Image (cartoon, helix red, strand yellow):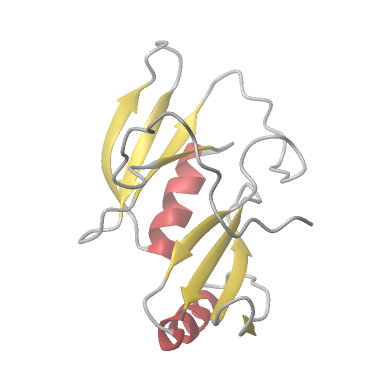
Length: 149
């Protein structure tokens, strides 16, 4: 594994970005996914948006009071195969929590919601952090991540 510790300089200036605006996830069952993301992550429907191709749509959900937006995308021609991080594209979704105690609260919430999850992983290397991983109905890994560095 190669670790990059400094950025590669470029002769061209790269235009600025201000952050991640939203994430779109292709799902197999739009109704089941919307219910799950609402129940488990506290997301609510912001709006439904047709795809620009005229084929399919996205249910765009948000966590009130945050800038988090997740689009649950329905594509009629999607293969309906369960998610695999071994295919090119998304590997996992990581959501930041504010404190280590918040991570413990999430574990309690996941247990109460009947959501299977891994054990909390905590380490001081390369900087203090802890995380817990669970999967959405399509098998997409979601990581709740606390960074203490």
